[in-house]
Image 1 (cartoon, rainbow, N blue to C red):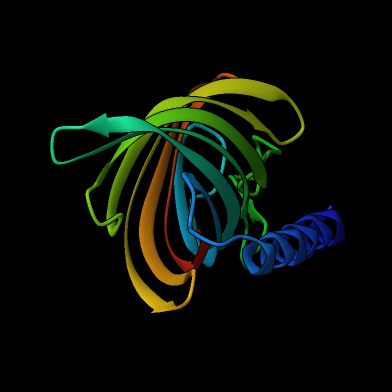
Image 2: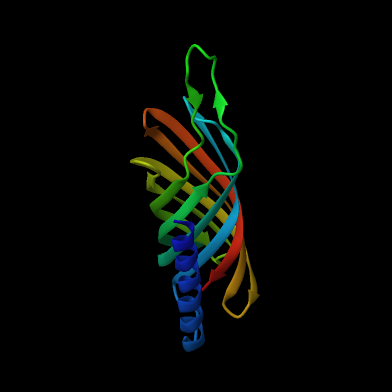
Length: 183
């Protein structure tokens, strides 16, 4: 699974780089590639995840200008992985162990806003998460970006996903990430 994500990220970066060379001026389309640290909590029979990782790809399109910025539509695909964990078992008479935190795949469609320079963005929308089963959620993301060179920007962001019901438990996923934006 991780190998498939890495292949997706590399292919997206190569494709975006090739289109960047051919284009004359930056258009309304942007691609963000991010990695970082993820945390997660559950309410039920799962361990919390305070040592995880996140990786995601965000494809955004500026629909039109509004006020001092622009209205965006976006699609995000990412993963919220788990760090090191140990199995914790309850009292022997229960004969149950606490389950490790699920490794979630996150797919979200979102609307957002960016300021006129494109350096500040915020997104929100519905999400679908998948680990062993699929569940619905709510996605939110905010980031700040600074131009590095030509059409490449450095990005720092935060992401959160609320999953109200996954196997009878609710989960909150969060993370901070760093990456690149290709415009």
